[in-house]
Image 1 (spheres, rainbow, N blue to C red):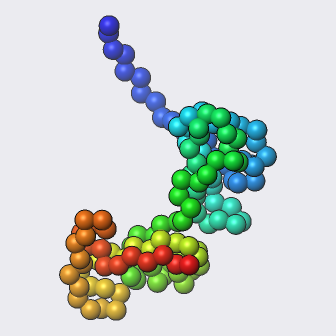
Image 2: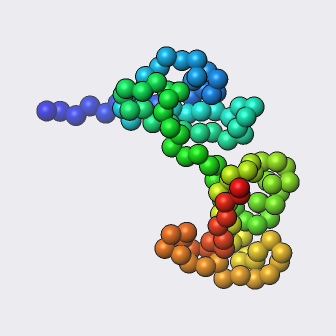
Image 3: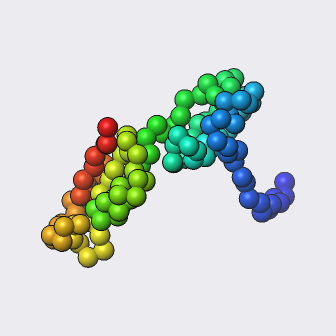
Length: 124
């Protein structure tokens, strides 16, 4: 059998929560649904279809937004109101190996968090 190469781009379904709640869509098994940012959530959320449930009845894959960045980036994002309650925050080394307060750090190595991770916190 010969092979045929088809080059394409895939756009996943995405809409705001109010649109998904009004829909009678039953996503196929493993079909990805993207919930866009809206007035209640300033971060995208995701669901995966099971082939039988309505989109609005499926659980979210990730219920908490995740912030990964340096201490200085976190403080700037938080001051701008971009880090909502419940965010998983992972603080990493900056490029020159210093934390946001100017002290030198070694940026620990963790099999779970990885190299260069200074800390992990969940705001709640």
